[in-house]
Image (cartoon, rainbow, N blue to C red; front, side, top):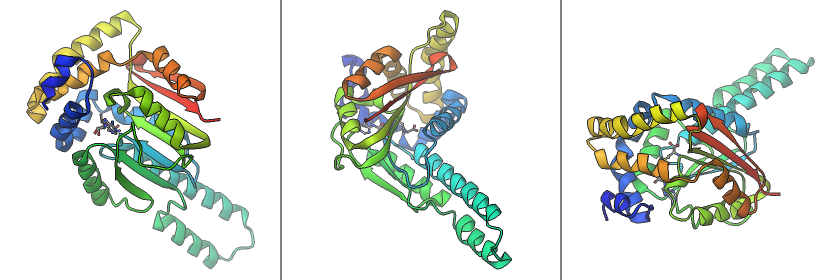
Amino acid sequence: CSVHDYSMRGTPNHCSVYQVFENVAKKYDVMNDSMTLGIHRVWKDILMHKMNPCPGTLLLDVAGGTGDIAFRFINYVRSVRQRQLQTKLRHHQNLSWQEIFESYQNDKFNNSLGDSQVVVCDINREMLKVGKQKAQHLGYSEGLSWVLGNAEELPFDDDKFDVYTIAFGIRNVTRIDLALQEAYRVLKPGGRFLCLEFSHVSNPLVSRLYDLYSFQVIPVLGEVIAGDWRSYQYLVESIRQFPPQEELKAMIEDAGFFRVDYENLNFGIVAIHSGFKL
Ligand code: SAM
């Protein structure tokens, strides 16, 4: 079971993908920032704005790794709750100053998530371990849980979640069709599927520059920062082999989702696919 297995076969398998993320787990966040020049943060923020979760949302973040999407979700829901509280208090003319002060203290400074919850599910123990340490360090605990599990065989009941996200994860899955079927199964009717993933650039000039950067720079960065050329070469190859936007859209529709659409970001370097279980 080695990273080399992947490049030899050209298709991911659990064993080699597991090894890749075990190798990169500790340096994953710093590599993410250097490889994308920090732009992955903007892409993840855009995903969150697209989701626009309301308080009470139950989110499943599959291939959630070190928790980036989960932490953004928590921040987003907290800020929505704070805005709702401010609006409510501004409209209640009869409340005493004390009542206003208390409800503000209770809600705002508890940083409450209300009844929203996020479950991070990932196949890799090391990635989850780093994520949990990060959560502890950043003070996230309420409404957040971590589950070891495979996207192709999710350890959850049917019709459970309001939203399913998978960010930079689906291209690592061996059977994308199975992962999509599982996403459909665990979502409630009316639930939303959102996938953020590297995709294919149509502009020839941007495509050329992007290829140069990916093949020449990223493995070097991997070697310099994480001492691991092969894992980062795998990441680049897995991006190239991943189905283009329209093909992925068709696969999501085949899994049963409706109103499937996608938005290209930065000329299609990444795309956000969205669909609904209706
Ligand atoms: N979503 C996180 C983010 O955006 O920063 C992490 C993305 S990381 C590139 C890909 C993650 O997919 C890894 O944590 C890896 O362990 C996970 N993964 C790969 N195959 C998986 C599978 N079959 N089921 C669940 N997670 C998987």
